[in-house]
Length: 375
Length: 223
Image (cartoon, rainbow over all chains, first blue to last red; front, side):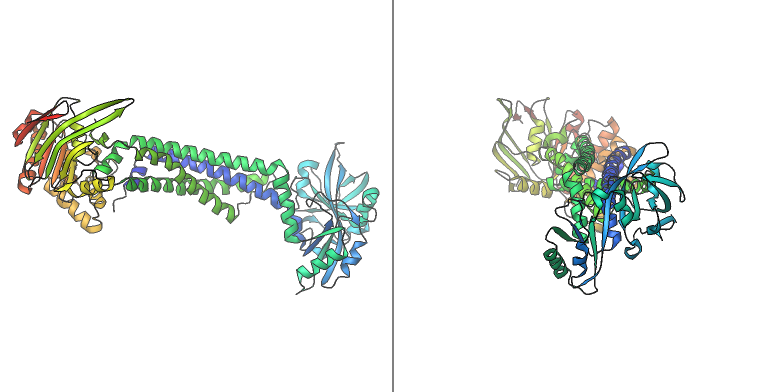
């Protein structure tokens, strides 16, 4: 079979390049914006995923991981007494102020536990150690904090909520949605720093279940024994936290808008080039009809051209999006292009390119058959 | 038995609020192997008549049949089927696909008529051979002369052995000697292979190969 559609598409190389460049640009834009958003969402719940708790007991109606209010720490004992619970610990999460050598102050999100090592948090230590964190005024900051706090190192001192702390460790990859740096310190030390807020209180109880325990049953029992708290599975709590950012803030809409604009750019470029190409090839389409072809033959040709432009444009757009990862990482952001995002953008590219070909379908449908005779 | 039979054909178009009558009872019959030249001034209705005989347009009224198949009230799909089976076109501007080689231009027409693969390749080669274009089979249209393009267009028109060939000013873009060669080829094909050939033209040289010359003026055929 002679592939007239493909040969015609590739015949005018400049036009073809313009078409696929437009698609590629839109694909890169959508992948990068989508990937950045996924990266931010990943930051927002990374501690939930890394902590490895099966269940999270939170204050009532907490909207997300970062925005909690406190509840009595003695609830921990009720949680520990439930059958199927292997381990339960209090976890404080609180915003505190760090005084910088410049005299300025910055906010940090403090994670405080009696023993982080039981929970595998923090999951990566870039320098120093968190062992013996409880034995003094010691703190560990994530290395990403240097962006806001300026350079710091293990052995340096910083004031946290007016108290001098020695930096004993630098963690890696512990980030938040808002990019507020994370800090790790002893549970009781954190309570001392904010006695009014945290005295006798905790932010969460994290629960590890015994092997083979019935998650739903333990969760229900915990909810029964702690009626003034909520109990979530780690997955549900992470999802709730992510949804908060997506739905309750403008960030989700902003990402949607950029993705939409990216799609629009792609559609307009493809539709415009296909339409211009159709207009220039009207006589050829008329000839196809005259020599025995039907509208359907021409629609197939246009559809094929749009699909080829979509596939090649996608491939050309995907590569720069991947190459941008290290560049984005240097700005302390994460670009996560998950397979679901890739598949969605690919399918969207093909569908939108085909939709943009519909404009040309209309033109072909109304083609004047006598056009072939005109000079 | 006529391969082309048009009787009292009219065609009107709407142009805004006005109705323009382009054909006003045009009639024409072509026998197998007959070559007819259709002459007329611009705006006389030549192209519209050719489009109706080529099943590209439908007549407003009157009777049209091609190779015994009547087109009166035919739906677009039926008209397309008749066009596919019985009609070959040759255009003034050649209308070759610029992205396809000479052989592919012919092969593509065969594909549209359901002939594919090796059979289509072989038939395309044979058709190009018939018009003396074998050595230019791999050339793109931009690398062919006007006469060579028209020969490829003729080879394409012969795909599926149509009983009627409709040619619109086929010599208009050719120099004198090439035009003569093309017309001789037309005449030979028509007579040897018993195809009806209708040539719309202003070129007086066409008269030399035509069995008949008919004129068209103001939408009416004058024998």
